Amino acid sequence: MAREAFKPGHDVDARVARMLPRMPIFPLPDVVLFPGAMLPLHIFEPRYREMTEAVLAGTGVLGMATLVEADSKAALPPIHRIIGIGEIVAHEQLPDGRYNLLLRGISRATVDLELPPVHPYREVQAHRLEDIEDDTKATSAAARALMAMTDRLATTLPTGGDRLRALARSADGPARLADVLAAALISAGDTRRELMEDVVVARRLDRLLSEVGVLVANLGPNKDSAPN
Image 1: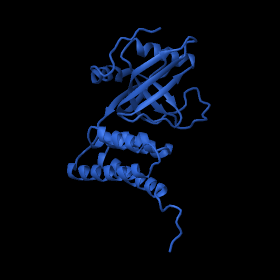
Image 2: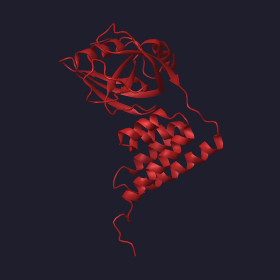
Image 3: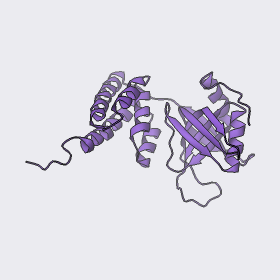
């Protein structure tokens, strides 16, 4: 069992900064790790078991990358340049060496360079992407509209409405609101990736407002009603 050398949530920004010059990545098809979201992972390939051992023995931080083509046969299948950085907040090593992990999203990052391999797993040089909130009035208005639409969605759900409301209200600010709702409500891979790649908060909120509006329309009580 690898020795945990970090405390989840403690000094995480410094740990991320330490890893940016050489960030281990776990590339998967159609997987996006939004800041603030939780992602369970099952690690079974030997190279990623080795990566997990190294991460647990170090900073607890790794990158989640999305493969460009899931069926690529290349030795190093291409990845999208925007990745999610997360920290391991819980882990379990199984008797056969596999791991169950729970990853919490910390931030977005851009891959500047994929580094020559020195381990079986892949590593990149990256830099953090910061959110852009130039128009705070527009951002606040968009966040209020999204919160109201989310409350409408919660009333249409047969179960889980209270949990959805609680999730939305637990978000620390407009940027985190957009991210946690994107993680919870958006299933289409392309849409999730586009939301991940957009650093303009007001634009992310507006996109989420539109997507949640579609869900409300599809789940609402009049969805099967014939027009008069």
